[in-house]
Structure formats: C-alpha cells, structure tokens
Amino acid sequence: MRTLVDLHNHLLPGIDDGAPDLATAISLAQLAVEDGITHMVCTPHIHPGRYDNTQATIATALSQFKQGLTERGINLKVSAAAEVRFGMELMEWAVTGQLPFVGEYQGKNVLLLEFPHGEIPFGAEKLIKWLISKEITPMIAHPERNKGIMAKPSKLKPFLQLGCLTQVTAQSITGGFGSACQEIAHKFLAEEKITIIASDAHNIQHRPPKIADAFGVIETLTNKQQADQIAANAAEIANIHFSQAA
Image 1: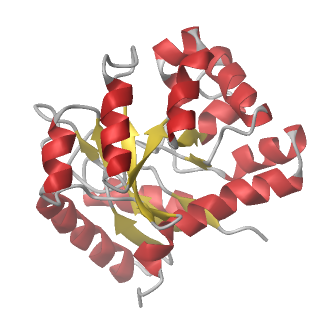
Image 2: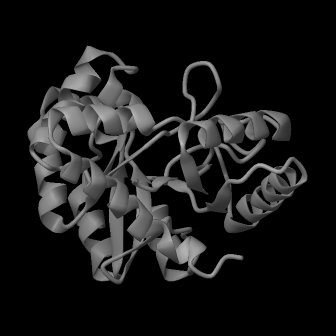
C-alpha cells in the first residue's frame, strides 16, 4: 500500500488564497485524511507584493493549524514550507537562509518554485543554474498549467536537463483543469517527466486536497510501479520534515 504524501497545498489558514480560516483548514484536512493522505507539507504562497509571507508568518499559521488538528483528533501529520514565486529576490533569500524548503532530494534542498502562469520568465535558466550551484534543487510547480509550456511543452526540457524536479497537479491528471492540461499532464507522464503529484488544494468545492484518484489514473495509463515510484518520490522528499517528528 503506497503512502500518500501531499507536498503542495494551501491549507494553512488565513495567509494566502487557500483556507481563509482555521475551520476551513480543518475541513480540508478531514477531506485529505478521507482520501488516504497521511502527511502534508503545507506550501502557502510567497509572492512579493501579493503574499508577503515569511518563515515567521508560516510558522505561526502552522502552529495554529497543528493545534486545531490535535484538538479535533484528526490524524494528519503536517509540516510547512512554501510555494515561492520566481523572481530575483530568490538570490537574496537563498544567501540569507530565508527560503523554506519542501524537503531534500539526493542530499540537496528542494524548493517548490512557481513560474508566472502565462509564461516562462526571461532569464529563468540562469537563475535556475545559480540556485543549483547553491545546492538548491528547484521543483517546478504545476508546469502542465503554465501557458508557455502548454503552448510548447519542449520549453520544460532545458529545466529538466539542468536537474529540476517537477510537481504535476493531481486534478490535471484526472481532468479537473480541462482537457488541455490533462493532455500535457498525460504526455509528461508517458515521458516519465513527473517527479511527484500533489493536490495544490485551495478550497473544498473546486480545489480539494485529493490525490488518490490521480494515482489510479497513473496506474491505469502506465503501471503500478510508476505510480508507486511517484508516490515514493514525495515521501522521500518530505522525509526530513517527518523523520524526527513525534
């Protein structure tokens, strides 16, 4: 039985466009548990000028969330990092130790990196190379939903060649973001370009914290071994968050 670890979601209450309050966060957590998810690394946005989160604001929200889960007896292990928007601020944050990492992979810190939805930014490869030189491995968030990559999927290739990981959204696999995203997600799956899948959960109605159905689709389209490996990748990356947790 595979362990379901969700490495990209917006359950922390009140700090971005995800759960607006603790009650909603708890309801989302209950949905995650019902889906079979056992561990979540919560990843609120860090997007300068829009969501000016820091490690401190994230830690405060995580503490509140954990307390709420404990009080309600919800058996979900949670930690936190961030989904960090691409920008030159990354260099300063990397040097000053302000980047929250979703985990480690092959001995290097993993950064969940979000490109602008409409394009691949100019100079992206140079900044990616710089991050990798600092022992930081970017994991590109939902590339199948980036309009630049959707228009030309080969735009992802240089980042994979540099050593980036990828996180594809579970609902893209199952068709929840439409046929175009699903087609790209299935293409990346067939080409074995998906490191992990995650929920990118924001709300109960349209963006719930569910990933189990996507693993069923992956297993049907490829095989059980590939589905298991994608699940195992998420567990491996998140291990540093939970290996010493009580």
